[in-house]
Structures are given as structure tokens and as C-alpha cells.
Amino acid sequence: MNFKKLMGTIALVGLILPYEANAAEQQTNYVSYDNSDLEFSISGHLNWALGVSHNSRKGAKDKTVHESGYVSQDSDDAFLWTDAEIDFSGKKRYNNGNELSFVMQLDTVRGSVEMDEVYFNLDTDFGRFMVGNKPNVAKILAVTAPDESGMGINDSDAFSFIYDGSDENFAINPSSYPILDNDSAKINYLTPEFKFSENHTLVLGVSAMPSDKGMQPNNSFYEKNAIKFKYGASSVAYYEAEFGKYTWALSADYTWYKAKNKDLNIPEDTIDGIEKDNIYQYGFGTTLSWGNWSVGGTYSYVNMSQETAQLLAKRKGVVMNNGYVWTAGISHKFGPLSSSLSFIQSRANNINLEDKKDVFSMGILGLKYTISKGVSTWLDLGYAKFDSAEHKDNKSPLAVLGLKVEF
Image 1 (cartoon, rainbow, N blue to C red):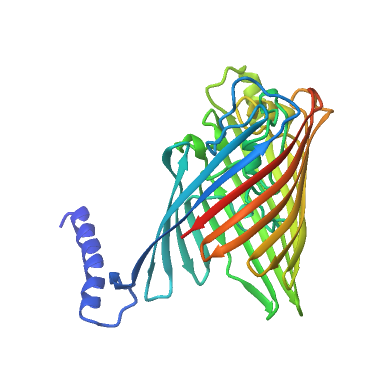
Image 2 (cartoon, rainbow, N blue to C red):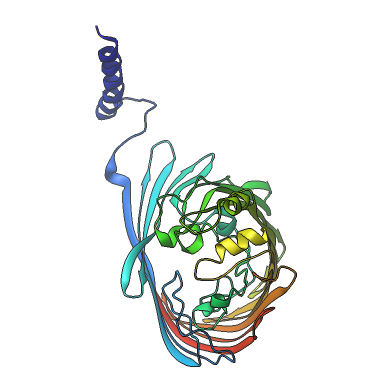
């Protein structure tokens, strides 16, 4: 018999036998393919808000459209804001104890609908494997400063309504966890929970980011498809301990990327130099919670060369550079009312003046009231300040009233 035919016959028999064994209810080591336990669900949210800002510095005539689809305000303005998301998910339990699940996430962006996060989860005795378009493990397990605000302080939606100087290359590191890879394709792995005792838990995680080639523009290197990364990796450790009525949480992360230029008019020798410079981000976050109170903060350092920062600045949106960002917050819950006072400050090298710092500071008092299950209203009162090393500073208060429906 021809060798290829022989191997094909063996493979076919190997596929058929498990099904026959299951049909005959014989005991085998194969996974059952019965679909009776396949579950599907739909969830999502709709966020609507009305707000006002008052910028001391007026921006450029052309307004900046961010990846989120919102428009930066370049003058005193009242605004309406909507944000909607629908998640289609399903899961399948196998007779060996493993569970396979998937999520397809749809976002509305300025009247259009596009696919956002799309990924598979495989839960096993050896941990959780996540494959697809999804944030890195450093963001997934990040311990962040307590924050009940609707706009948020990390990678805040407030940037959509305040003139941030992005058209003048004002440098901001907007988040205490790494976001440059956004939802580009990657492989994530989280270990099972390591229990040192009943009250001490440790989880480790790692992300492998082979590249963002072929991804949608909004999923590529944070915002624009003109900037790519060749590959990257992320790692995180999460620790939680209980001491009587107190719960202490701590996370530490380390992430790196290798940037790559694409279709930009930059001399080849410059491009080569940029590609040799990795981008690093590392930091930690901690919170202490007791009763209805929680307090905590974070610190993160972004390490990149000035040349790499200038390359990234050629896209529109938030400009990042070498420097650090810290956050701090305190929150309290009383019945249906949640409140927080949160702060963020970024100090990053100016894109054109390496020895000078651009400083962004913002504080938000957030109030959230739960009307009923899945329905809440929120009020954010904030103040942002942009101290530019190169241009005139900008200051702006921000008041936003919102309604959120979750299902």
C-alpha cells in the first residue's frame, strides 16, 4: 500500500474511533463532543453623558479624532458623549474538566460598529490560556488606584474633551499599566492561584506578542497602522493577602516592545537606529481595603529613546515619551452610593526638548449611584492641568453627568 494512503487510513481510524466509543458509551480517554452543555450569552453596556469643559488654552482648528472615536475639544464647550459595547460569549465544558470559552466584542465608534476584542479562553488545571485580540496580562491583573469615576483616570476618556496639546507633541504617559499594544493579537497565560495559606494568593502571567501585522488600525500599536511593533512581551505578578478585616493587593509588571516604522518618510539610517531601541514599561500598584473603604496608588516608568518617541509622535493621539506616571485614590461605598477621589500625574520628556518635562496632572471626584440592578447614574467633577515645556500651558475644569445601563 502506498505510504501516504497508509498514513491517511491510520489518521482516519484515529479520528473515528473516539466518536464510536462515545456513541457506545464505552469508557475512553477521549474528550466528549456532546453539545448539550454548550452555553451562549450576550452582555454589554450603554453609557451616555452630558458635560462641559473650560480650556484656558485654545487648540488647533482641526479637532483630533482619537482611537475611541471621540473628538478633543479645542475651546470652551458643552458636549454629549455616548459609549456602547456588546459582548457575544459562549463556553463549552468538557468531561476532562477543561472549559473553552470565546468572546466577540462589538464597539460603537462615532455611529459605526466595529469588532474590538476577539479571543478564546481555555481554562485547565494548568492555568488559563487566552489567544486573540485582547489586552496584555499586565493590564488584566493590574492593581489600580481606587476610582469610581465614569471617565476614569487611567487612559482617561477626559482626554476626549480637553485640549491636551497633542497637535503640539505634548508628551503624556496616560496610564499606570502598558497600553501600547492595545488589543493586538497575542497569547496570554495566567497560572492557577497559588495558595500559600488560606489568606495568601499569588497569580503569575505572561503575554507573547508576535506582532500586530494584519490587525485593524484601531488595534495596532495603540492607535495608528503607520506605526507597528515587530514583537513584544509582558509579564505580571499579582499577590493578595487578608489580615482580619483588611485585604492587601499588590501587582508588579514588566513589558517591552520593539518599534517598527512603516510607510513614513524617514531616512533608513534613522529607522534602523529606532528599531534597535526597545520600549520598556515597568511598575507596580497596591491597594488596602477594609469594610467599605479602599485606598491605594500606582507607579509606572516608561523607558524609550527620544528618537523612538519622535517616531511615535508622527501619529495623531496621545504622545508618549521617556518618563513616569503615578496615580493615587481613595474610595468609599455606602449602600447604593459609591464615591472616590483620584489623581494622576505624568512627567515625560518633551518630544523636541529632551531635557525638559511636559507635566500632566488631573484629579477627579467621582460619584456613582446605583438606581437598580444594571442601571446607575454618575457625576464626575475634575480639574486637569497641562504644563508644557515648549508651549503655553492649559488648564480646564471638567463636569460630566452620565447614565449607564449594563446587561
